[in-house]
Image (cartoon, rainbow, N blue to C red; front, side, top):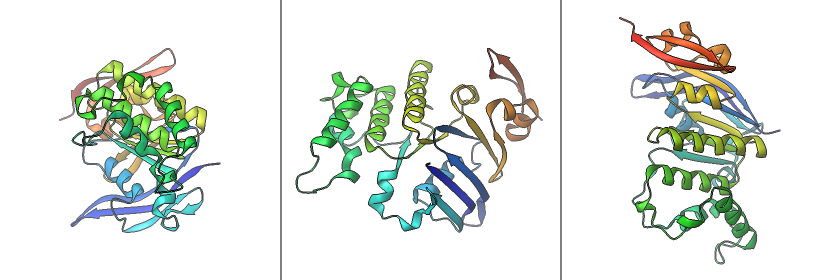
Amino acid sequence: MNSLELKKIKYSYTDKDILKDINYKFFEGELVGILGANGCGKSTLLKVIMGFLDKENGEILLNEKNVNDYSRKEFAKKVAFITQHSSQNLNFTVLETLRLGRVPHIKNSFKGLDLEDEEIVQSVIKLLNLEGFLNRDINTLSGGEFQRVLLGRAFIQEGDVLLLDEPTSALDINYSLEFLELLKERILKRKLIGLIVIHDINLASIFCDKIIFIKDGKIAFSGKPKDVIKKKTLEEVYRFKPVVLEVDNEIYVLPKRRLK
């Protein structure tokens, strides 16, 4: 069974503690939402897991093995990362961008992608209905189209873990729903581990199996959406008065006013 475990993770920037003693274990088949106010450490946590930032303390275990014991290529086979701020300034076509997902799996660097790699690429193209985009320059894509390409690249990478940093922030509601539906279906079907930093509490409630609220660099609350999306919790984390409704067995939040 795939797992990702964080043990006593700490990270500071200059003299400010951003993450303090983060402990959590993620399991396959689950999408876990990471929520909290701006600057609480959500995106920093993903960057520490990816190794973009060096943690000061603690361990990260992937499938019970310390991530420091994986080679860069082995780690790239296991973990895919999608961010809202991925650059569209490269002169790549959609097909070239998608094929980048197979780079960690290339068996012969001189030959490049083999038949198995190409079959995986084509299967994801079909899954995400990207056939009509393949020869387009990624710079010509809309935000929603580009995010779907990045999702496809992550699927093609075929890792055990998907890390997503605010992938729907710039998308309208239709693109957001489509993106999250495709993501959730893939996680369930392939028994992947999914971590998503997301600001929209309602989307998190609908699509996430569990939610982590980070406050002051620590996990303040965690659990199933029904158990943690509560008036008192949101007041403490975000400092605003919400109206929390249950509709068709799902939780929805309406903002009321900020607390003084």
